Length: 107
Image 1 (cartoon, rainbow, N blue to C red):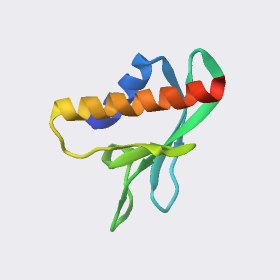
Image 2 (cartoon, one colour):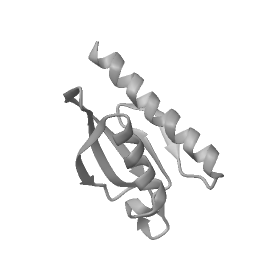
Image 3 (cartoon, rainbow, N blue to C red):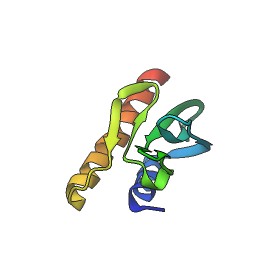
């Protein structure tokens, strides 16, 4: 597994999210879907879509280049080749935005 996928997984776990299901993507542009929930509200689920499209078709999740929250496409993260500090900050912001979005839906 490429580092960006394990980083996302670890950051979600760190913020008390769990990945309930991993679903294969479509034949157009989605590599994989992750259905996630927060441990304090497990009945409320959301989906992260991982994008990866090349000239040869849909890429595996390990080669995907971005993801977004299906329920709010403004919450997104791109796996650009930044330095480690920029990547970690972008990742934290992404997961914090998911957490805020879910908190708004829970109240």
